[in-house]
Length: 107
Picture 1 (cartoon, rainbow, N blue to C red):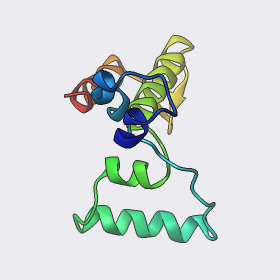
Picture 2: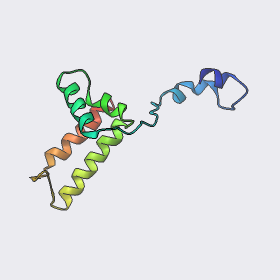
Picture 3: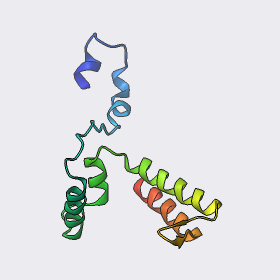
Picture 4: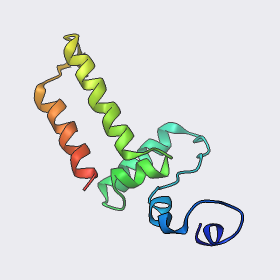
């Protein structure tokens, strides 16, 4: 990016390089061959402390903030309709916990 901005190939100002570099690009990931085995492997890595949920989401090509926002929206939609998730009622605390996770991720 630095050399592109210094070249004659673009009209973008070099003074905004920090803005251009602030994004985290996630390329397309190949589909897993055996989803069940991959999920077990992720669970094992998490249990052993070899990875984090954030790292695993990045490995899948997912944006953590998008995932958390989607989870919060899903929980709110369930609660608004009086529906349950995993046979348990969705509570205000679950929706608030998802909000806190999103806020902490942005720190």
